[in-house]
Amino acid sequence: MSAAGPPVVIGVGEDFRHDDGVGPAVVAELRRLAALDVLPPDTRLAVCFGEPTELIELWRDARLAIVVDAAAAEADFTAGHVVRWEVEDADDHHDRPAARALDPAPTIGPGPAATHGLGPGAAIALARILDRLPARLVLVAVVGADFSPGPGLSEPVAAAVRRVARDIARELGRESLSALSDGDLLSWSANAVPPMLEA
Image (cartoon, rainbow, N blue to C red):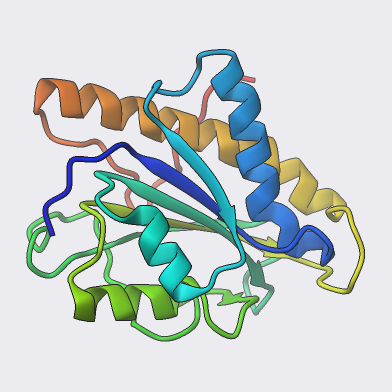
């Protein structure tokens, strides 16, 4: 679907399930960067528990939505590992080579599994049916180690928060410039190292 609303970053998770709180932690770091005028001024920041209709409402009309969620570790993925997918809308973005369509299952993607029974994967499947996908949708999964009850992130996940937030800030800056210039959007390739701001 065509959308021209402001970009939104959505942190999915629960602060009191240790590493499941990585999405809200990234949004908190982005709020700190926004106070320093690092983010485009129209960027919206939100936190939710990952319920599909809530996600769809939060990304409604966005020209770019970035969803950050925790993922359970599987083979080849260790705690703190970050995986990024750009979801392809079959109607609008079929010719974008960097985009990868997700299987519309309740997991976040083909790698590490999401930590919610429903969540981004289910929201994407429902949004496709309802024609409610944003113009661009990026999912960022941070692999966690500890999802037991309690506050605080494990050390490798906490170490990833600032890096992920700064990568998202860079992505938002590129998107904002591209929107202003009507040029091609720069996007991370599935096989490339994502862009990083200097620490």
